[in-house]
Length: 299
Image (cartoon, rainbow, N blue to C red; front, top):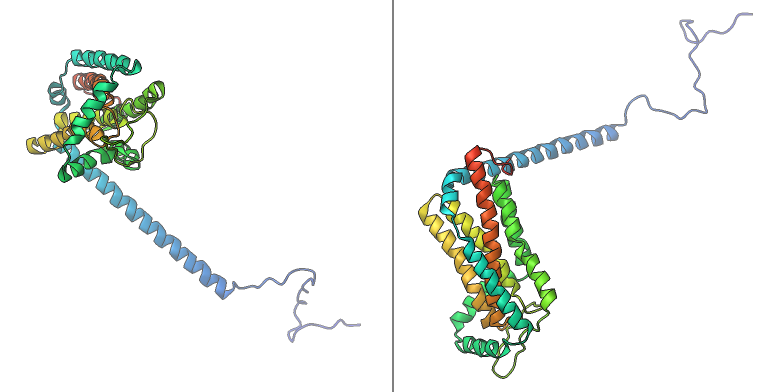
């Protein structure tokens, strides 16, 4: 008996679909196609924007690096400008030791109170604003932002050696924390004659964290400005401004009633010693770099 043929042409029988298998469409879903196209276009656009932003940032850093290189002097000139005597560091360390012993034995309290009252007696509105401005960089949050921002800026413009030593100079903040724990001296308390400005304070009064940190951090910035900046007017302005901040912060701490005079004096002495040690190490490394023509930290 003849078998029936499928189709008009009597060709081969069409394969039958297994009903157990899912029904897979032969053509892609139009909605899925559109979604894929949109996602691809968005990814391409985001990639282009990110690439453009990275290129712009790269050009900005390269421009800043070039400007810094053109605006600073060579290593031999910088080293020659920065000569300092270790005798000053030794004297500062001896002075700090003497004040530390006097405070520890409670022999400085009378003179501290007398000097503090004398400083606070000269009260003027403009002086209040000046002393507040001088102390402002040393309070959180700005004290946690300004130094690392300066270090990061030096690193980005390829002043890598300067960034490393600026970090070391900022180490006076850690030194202050250690000394405060050792001394644990009470801060001044407001009274009939003594005035204390409200501020976010804590810890021991000795030494002054503001002063010792300013001497290390802004003192080294001033040294870099003095030794590296090519333009004499800009060099004088930057160095003078930074040193002015270091000079004013000590009186501001007494004027605002946050520290005793011996706290401030001891911090200036120890901070100066610390700064000279950092500067001396920096100058030696830069001297080697100037002689050999290679700086291991600059790459």
